[in-house]
Length: 359
Image 1 (cartoon, one colour):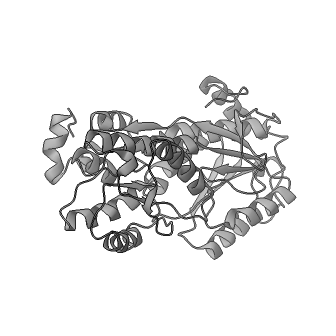
Image 2: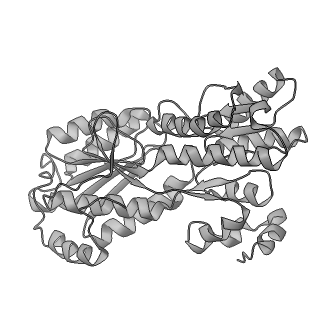
Image 3: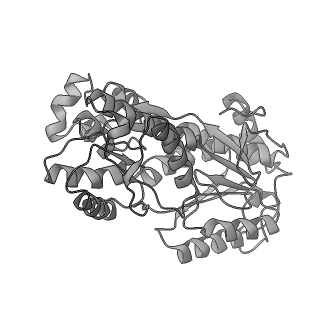
């Protein structure tokens, strides 16, 4: 985390005690009272909405436990719910949370549903943190440096082509982007294109973006057919999309450079097996910690500074992503963001052993 008003872990412990004592103030009053009592008690409620479980396994496997643990340690009463990929459910969850009262809302957007919630919350004086995905009208945006995520992905494609002895400027590359309804998808795309275009790459095919492995597989298979079965590399915006692409490559007996992000179990397995060139590891605990520190600061009446801002002027606290190839997979395991026993099952066991990973 790189904003100048950073709160240390030691400071969090002290702020935790104050929050539990009901002394937090200045960040938003805790909603409309509703059925859950009022006053300072509501100011200690952290209301969190996660988007789904399909676009990435990270939301339930990583973000939820990190946020639960960190928010509880900071003295918050926690209300974390998942919209399950349903914008109507997203709105319903938000209404229920606001009725009970929130001291701060931490929202992961889903297909634009976060904007209406942010507007409603801010109308009640509740600060809103857009978590991982940008939301129009949020007070702050906490995520990874998403353009840099794209640059790392693009570089993995360029490097993969070079290692395969192919001229990137002559390569047949398919672009498999993310859902344009996700504001991060454009940043991933722009970062990747910046690097790939500099190497002379232009897309041979670019199906509509989506966050869905099965649909990505279908879209890629159609693109591959249109290219006469020829492909030299695939820029895939995340591991879920990459996994869909790889099923089609496997079916056609092809192994080419494929990018990804999230360091999911499937993505790391594909990296270890040589089916995916690399994945971009986003240390999710660092992102969660940054959001929690920000929430505490806002409730303390501070105005933390951010090192970036979005095009609409929203302050943007950006965490640094890391490119992970086969030799770096162990670092993800060591950090606790991948379980070695789950990762090293079946055909992946030998590759794990080669990289010094044991369950």
